[in-house]
Length: 380
Image (cartoon, rainbow, N blue to C red):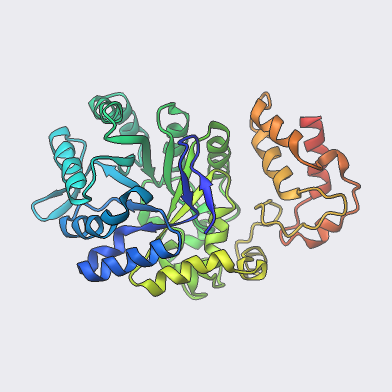
């Protein structure tokens, strides 16, 4: 298992994580089997947004022997009322649910205190400017949460969170199909029968979000990495081709600022299928060739940092130069950290010989030589 730094939190998390939602439909023994399998395969981060009491208790019992090894994403504002889940900002309910989370997870702190499910700007403003955020600050001051996070499906809200200053990481939905969708508060659009009509190249606001998070040191953990399994079938995929779990994971993990993908598991077999990513070949990870050959909605002309351009005879890490160039191009002045990263590369755009081999290998027809010229103008 490989581990990545989660933004500026100082935490190192497994790049394959555990999204706990599916565990709601399993008993304590089955939950423990999944947790043990995760531990055996090096997974150390889990997301528990669910307020249902039994799943919280079952997860808590399973992780208790090795609590110190786990990074827990626990959500603030996800409550259990009258036998059902309710998202709320009512502080009395929020506090009660958080105390319940601590008790059932058998811990006295949560590593990542997640402001739960904010998908509209107006609500974001109410949360960060009101008593809810004061409560979150209080929890952090008391050490009951170690870091502040936020979960959202809306790229605009995510960007506001990344720039807010106190929010250190974001749980965000990422997969190839969602990256082509505009920001929306209506998740039904993502799963409608005809949302393929909306696709046509990576949405600029989503690409910008990843760059902003990278620049600000705000880490991303990923939900909906498989698009609910829809991408596994050519019939249900908006691209008209099927992707594998490994390809979906590789897509998410090659986005800037992404540290870990939270994957839902029903069984230990599901865990092993996800962690197979760690030993997969480059051919098995290759989402780019599949999408480039899709009958509709490819990423033509856009760099997805897939690495097909390699190897470069001059030794340039072309995908990294492109990533840093995209990050720099969105600023009036290149951030010092980005400039330093670029300067630390063994070879960069100034070393390009314009041989064109990279362009022949690029599945998406990116004009790499032009981008190298522009990168050298920006950084040189």
